[in-house]
Image (cartoon, rainbow, N blue to C red):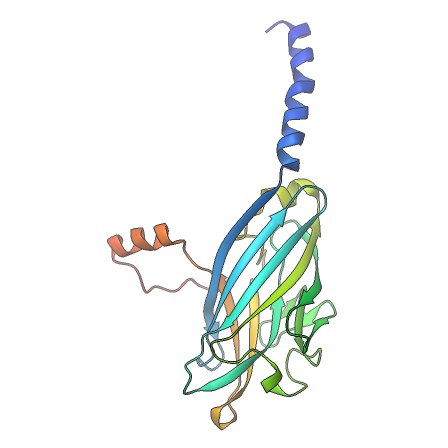
Length: 211
């Protein structure tokens, strides 16, 4: 290619790439438990990742308590780790006013430290009355902000915006029948199409290992 033509095209390519990176990208994914300390608490999380360009993105999580009704129990805490390239995660709001944001890092023992979270009484391990949390069958919506380099955030989706080098999320259960409590970690679950492929291959039922 003529060097002059090449030089004239290069700025156009760079501009197009920048425009593409700035385009709003909204993706969704489902997360579920892939490990717990007691094997009692269950949850389902619908995650929406919204990056409209720039150095911040919005993360919305609809967290449902799927624990067996006979076991009771309430979700009283949620902790999150940002994906690769996420430098910080910050709590914004929750439609259950009993939940308060947690300072970073969040000590979600025994699963280590997380970037951000929210909990009853601003205490992931305990604090406040558990029945102020998310009861069995109920859903609560959390909103967080993620920050990082624009190019890094543009490459993420709802399936990989959490986790990075650690666990994606940790969910705290308290106030179960008989006084049980539990701590579960969550992983992104396969999309419906992927589940169908796994079923055809005869591997449905295999849980993903914690990241």
